[in-house]
Each structure stands twice: as structure tokens, then as C-alpha cells.
Length: 278
Image (cartoon, rainbow, N blue to C red; front, side, top):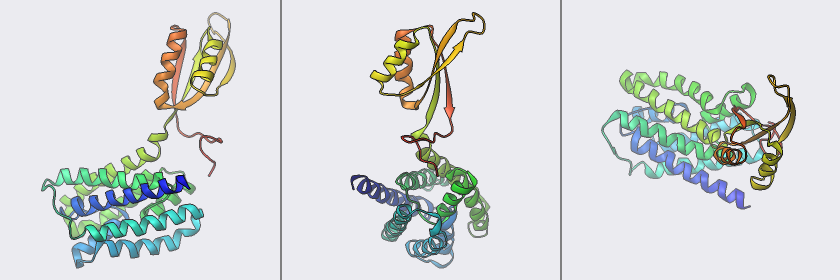
């Protein structure tokens, strides 16, 4: 229950940030976006239609098409996200104003805030509907990152909006879309970034004891030997959060300053306690 409440609060926060990005940076500067919100913006520019209402209607249609690709929890979160973000878009329509007339700054902040808003929603296990539904499908079945899948979809939508907002605004919009995609990837992948560490040391037993009792981490012991000396050596292998890496290196250095340590970025970890198999 506590996690559910936290997730819902993050979705609400994401919806608020998303609405601010749209109504305070994007619409006043006549920029577009990718996915449903890009189509929504074009409809607003052409016919003056409410961004909140159009966003809700289009997302409901797309979720109706893609609902079978999601688990119940993700589906419920997505519906909740669509409702809250559409409400915030609708409420902030009349309050939205141009915070800056610098189009480049508007594009940067629009992308940054859209990325943060959607990143919080994704982080909570939901989506914001629209292109995020298609992006999640691409993530699960094609192996694309959600950010890259959204970037591809968004470029197609932005290309179509050029006929309304013009080439110059379209180029600024591409900057915004790119920034948003990278911020989303950071929220989803970067906060959980893990690294693999190989440790070769004559004090392997002491280092292993420190890893277990001081860091509460497990590891694997591999048998190895020096290619030059021919001496048998223990090689410790473990996967940790990048935030823990500095602490690990300090503990190794305190025990054996001559230890040989290599660090490798890990693309994905599938195991209980890390990430479940999709």
C-alpha cells in the first residue's frame, strides 16, 4: 500500500510538471512535441481546441488499442496518469503564459520538464498514454529503450507538424524532443545504472570479508592465475550500483593499494533482487 501511494504521488507530480512544460513553455512559443501531445498542440494551433480535452480523448483511444500489452497494474497506473495529466493540462490552460520569448530556452526547458514529468511517471510503472504506449510495446518486443522508441515516434509526429509551426520552430522542437528522450532514459535506466567490478588481489579474502560485512553485497569468486607469474589468484566479481563504486574502491585501496580492479558498465541485470525477466 505504501509503495502504491508513493507511485501515485509520483505520477501526480509528473503530470503537474508535464502540464507546466506544455502550457508555460511549449504552447506560448508555438512549439510542438512528439506523440499525442504534438498532435494536441497542432489541434490547438489550428482550431483552438483545449489541450487537456484533446490529450484525454486521443490517449484513451490509444490505450484502448494497446491495453492488452500491459499488466493490470501498469494499465491502471497509465489510466490514472492520463486522467491526472489531462486535468492539469486543462486547469493550467488559462494560467499558461510565456515565461521567456527566447525560443531556444523554451525548447530546452520544455524538453527538460517533459522528460522529468514522463520520467517520474515511467519510474512509477505507468505511462502517459499516447506514444508512450507504443514506446513501451517497442521496449518489450523490439528491445529498444523507451527513450529511443519515443524519439523515433516523436520525430515522425514533429515532421508532420512542420506544416503548421514552420521549419524554424520545428528545428527547435527537435531539440526539445531529443532532450526529453534523454532525460526519460536517465530516469528509467540511469538511476539504476549498475557496474560490474573485477578485483584481483593477494588480499582477496580480506576484501571479500569487507564486501560482505561492510557493504552487505554478494559476489562470485573465480579461480585465476597470473599470466606472467603463473601464481594462482582469486578473482572477485560483483555487480553494484554506480553510487556504491566510490565506497568500494576506497575499501579496496585501504586493504590493498596494489589490487588490480576493472570496472565495466552493465547493460542489464536479470535476477531476483535486480530486475525481473519481462
